[in-house]
Length: 302
Ligand code: NAD
Image (tube, rainbow, N blue to C red; front, top):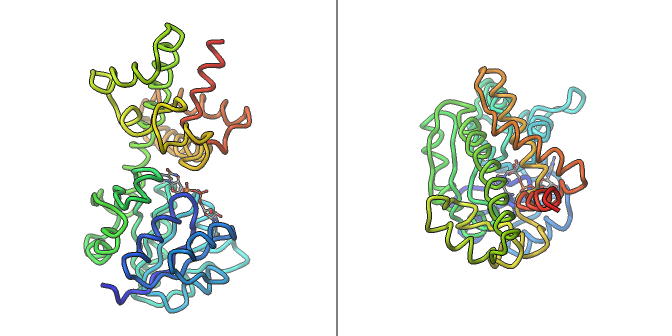
C-alpha cells in the first residue's frame, strides 16, 4: 500500500492535516495549494510540495482533493471552457478521491467524465472537523463503485476511522448534506440554549455539563462548545479562528436547500438555519468558525 504516490490538492484547515497523516503514514505525498502558508505547513511533515496542481499529479496513481466548493472542484478537474481540467492529464487507472463537500450533481458530473477516461472517481466528503482531521479519526461518506472504494479504503484508513459506502456517485455528498444541515441546526439550537442560560444567570460551563448528560446532549456540546473558554482546543477558545468557516456552513446549507427544493422535501429548520448563517455572513463574519453564530443570538438578546 505504501507504494502509492498520492497527489493532494487543497491543503487548508482539513486537507493540510489529512495530507500530513498520509505523509506520516509513510506514503509518498505530492501536495499543492494556491496558498503558500498552507504549502509550507505540509512541507514540515515531509511531503513534497509541487509548483502547481498539474505538477503535483504528474506520476501520481492516486489524486485526493479537498477544496472549498463545487466550482473549485469542477474548475480544477474539468476545466473552465478555456483551460482543460486536470482530468485530461491523468492516465487511465488513476483513482481520484474528492473529499470536498460539493453538490451531488457536481460529483456525478466528475464521475461520469472519469468513467469516459478510465479514471475511478469517488466522492468521499468527511465529518469530524479539524480535530478529527488532525487525529485521523474522520468519518468518510463515500459515493461510487464498491470496488473503487475497496482500492481507496487502506488510504482512507490513514485519515479516518469510519468509512461508510452511501451508494452510487453523489451519494456520499447527499449523506454529507443531510448531516451538515442537522449540524447547522444543532449549532444554532445549542447556542440559543446556552445564550438563554447565560441571561438567566447560569454559568455556561455548568449548563453545558448539565445538558451534555441530559436529553439535550449532542455533538456540539460534546466536542465543539460555541462559548469561549468552556472547552480547550475549539475555535470558540481561539477567537473563532480555524475550524469550519461560517461561509462553508452557509454553502452546505444552500446545497441542502437546493436538494430539498428539487425533491420537494420540507426542511423548515434547515431553511431557517440557512437564513441565520446568511445574516451572519452578511454582518462580516463569514470567515469565522461556524460556532461564532452564537454572537448573532447574543446580539438579538441584547
Ligand atoms: P479551507 O478554506 O481551509 O481550505 C481550502 C483550501 O483549498 C485553501 O487552502 C485554498 O487555498 C485551496 N484551494 C482552493 N482552490 C484551489 C485550487 N484550484 N488549487 C489548489 N488549492 C486550492 O477549507 P476547509 O475547511 O479545509 O474545507 C475544505 C472542504 O472540506 C470544504 O468543502 C468544506 O465544506 C469541507 N469540510 C470542512 C470541515 C471543517 O471542519 N473545516 C469539516 C468537514 C468538511
